[in-house]
Image (tube, rainbow, N blue to C red):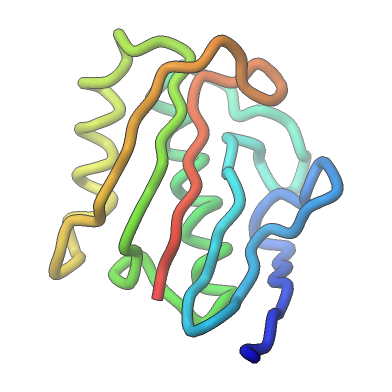
Length: 128
């Protein structure tokens, strides 16, 4: 049986519920949904979809690094959008974020009725 280890870092927002920032198990890292909270204030970053997407991705990167993983080891992401009209804007920022990777992760992107704290963007991932 593989070891299951919870991951926590002050460089990303603390969990706002009964969950871990990430779990390491079976050689993979399962990162919980990252929203655009500023870690030092636990407040939503000011601005619109661009700023929120960039902050959530920064938080994702911090959790990956705390897990001894990296953006280049992400194999699957799930993106949650408040409004699918923001897809092109998000996709451009997402592409830039993963531009240093040797591969493009598998991805799902869905529009949802509501996200935690009424943010516009959330992302979760699985990494090696």
